[in-house]
Amino acid sequence: MKPTHLSPHLAGAEDDADDLGFAGNPDYLPASIEQAFPGHLIVIEGPDGSGRSTQLTLLAEWLEWRGFAVKTIGLKRSKLLSKDLDDLTRSNEMHLMTQVLLYATDLYDQIENLAVPALRAGFVVLADRYTLSLQCRAAVRSVNSDYLRNLYAYAPQPDLCLRLAVSPETAFRRLFSRKSVLNHWEFGGDLNLSGNVYDSFLQYQANMQDTLAGMGTEADYTAIDGDQPVSVVNQTLREALGPYLGLENIEYSPSDRLRNLWDIR
Image 1: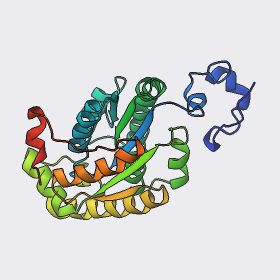
Image 2 (image 1 turned 180 degrees about the vertical axis):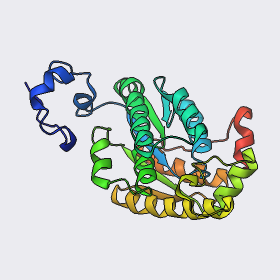
Image 3 (image 1 turned 30 degrees about the vertical axis):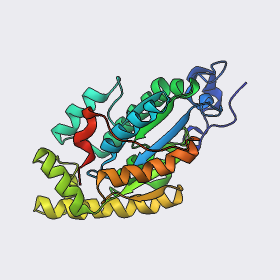
Image 4 (image 1 turned 90 degrees about the horizontal axis):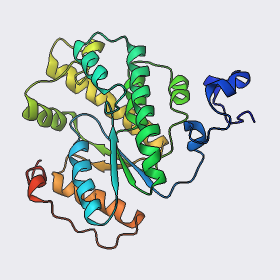
């Protein structure tokens, strides 16, 4: 049977559906996302310097201590493309649409090979950014919104969507104190916003924040103040996750291994 759920960017491809792998293959991604899974997909979005990765690390430990199996996915983490993407982004020479498509491929590879199997097995899948960040990055560079929606039409819908909002000044302080350098994409170097890296960063991150807020509101993301200390933000995130996962006790104190993350401001 030919699929009836082809998205607009595959319109006209019905005659080739068998060749595309739809027919008789329940593991193929478009078929997989129509299934109900026992696991949970929880997404935390936010710009560079918002503390996403720190929070995901802490939440993973907390959930594992509460008896959940956890799998984490994120940008540039697929076995298929992560190394190549790292090399290409360092070169600062990627064409915009090449970048958009490679990041989409990287995410879909993780969804199909990591997230969907984990969701089937009942895991909590924590996504350190998902389709919202990728669409916003492209949108601030004037990529067509319909094209972006079609590009990510087959990504499974998250069960819980959270977005860390942080001021550009706080983001800069955190990033620069951690690594004393900013990469080309973090300050929007490809957009020629300013001859000064700091000013370019503030302008680019302000644009990203506005876009994340607008598109995040449309997608029902809950905004969380990421300017607060890590421990405070983590408490707020646990308050959001706890009731959803049926946890009455959401208390948490990090292990010695993660204690250094707890007091970051």
